[in-house]
Amino acid sequence: MLSTVRVAPLQRVSHGGSGPHRRSRSTAPWLRVLCWLLLCVTTTAWAEQSLVQGARVWTDPDKTRLVFETSAPIGHRLFPIDEPHRLVVDLDDARLMTELPKVDLSDALLVGLRSGPRGDHHLRVVLDLKQPVRAKSFVLSPNERYAHRLIIDLTPREGAVGRRVALPTFPGAMPGRVGSRGDAPPAFVVAIDAGHGGEDPGAIGAAGTKEKDVTLAIARELARLIDQEPGMRAVMIRDGDYYVGLRERIEIAHGHQADLFISIHADAFSNPRARGSSVYTLSHSGASSASAKWLAKRENRSDRFGGVEASNTSDLLETVLMDMTRNATLESSVDAAALVLTHLGRVNELHRSDVQRAGFVVLESPDIPSILVETAFISNPEEERRLRDRAHQRKLAQAIMAGVRVYARNYPARGVMVDTSPRGLREVVIHAGDTLSGIAQRYQVSLRALREHNGLKNDVIRVGQVLSIPEDS
Ligand SMILES: [Zn+2]
Image (cartoon, rainbow, N blue to C red; front, side):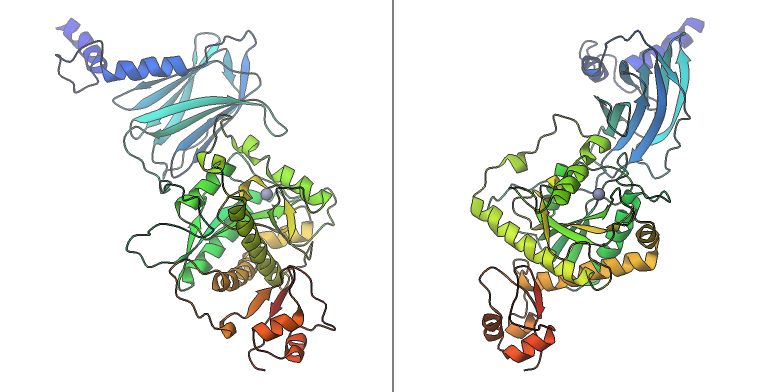
């Protein structure tokens, strides 16, 4: 009897718990999964003992990410155990120098983590799971912020828990969306991208304010305002403290057929006196200034901190498109940026009074007009304080909303009914070739009324300037 007791658990494990014994031993699914996992792991042995200096968990609607930060590259193996579901992470020549993180109750996959030594030199971390998972691991080399990192991404083995939508086939057509949205009434969809998140805190203020927290707060406020607006709908690219790759952000916006993409950030500079808001669009051919170029380079580092696998390429962005589409998208982007900038200038000082351009990866959507808002300088102690203030966050969101409202009236979503009479357009962005008298004529207002309404001393206007059209004339 004793031997039966000992054998039973082994049989249970080897047959996956419920499988009948006639199932072929050589093709058991658990065995195939195990073989696959063993093929995928890093098996390099390191003489030096790695110190695990940091361990973090990030909960995302699609996956749970576990990060081990180590003093040296680390060899590891992953293997699943069922009943109850666990994932074992064996780290070679490693010692834990930190506490294992607590797991959020809302996490769909993880219950918690525990660890113990394995032999004299090795470390074992056990992940207690709520359901069977698929695990994928990769390593990242050190950068300015982090030492070596081992990333383990967990996704549910069956189905998906995510809120993100699948990518539709890429239309490769003109700006705006192609394709049906089902029975839902058409809405102007604004994708709101809270910059940074998770492993990537973004810039950090002198008082410790993290850019990723401020951007999320302002993004949520903006989403609330957009959802209150008739005929508009907001999509949050991230809605929690986790990292989404820059190209994945574009793909999520695309999956939701967004009409406009707004990336929210907070600026930082070595001089703490630098202050004010600025708005950027993409430039394929050089930046509008040296500081714009520097800023884009800094924002583009996000993927290195956030943790994106090197092989992660995007089909969407490799699609070859007509220049015409890109140019039309860029022109709409500049209009949206000019409108948002004008309204931001009413609630905050402007760092740059013109729309700026630089090579931001997150703005590279070929067919969704995209802008990046640097709300204020988190490196300026006064602006850092205001960025944390709920009332000021709301003011910034309201200003962005005011610009979006005018933009949506000028560039309605396909199928959305709008008042197209000239009086319906209260603000207009100046394009190359526009003259003040031409605009007065187009909107059937007198030149004098237009000049007075906008406080113009003469008839000189510049590209990107926003003029508001008087109601009565
Ligand atoms: Zn940023």
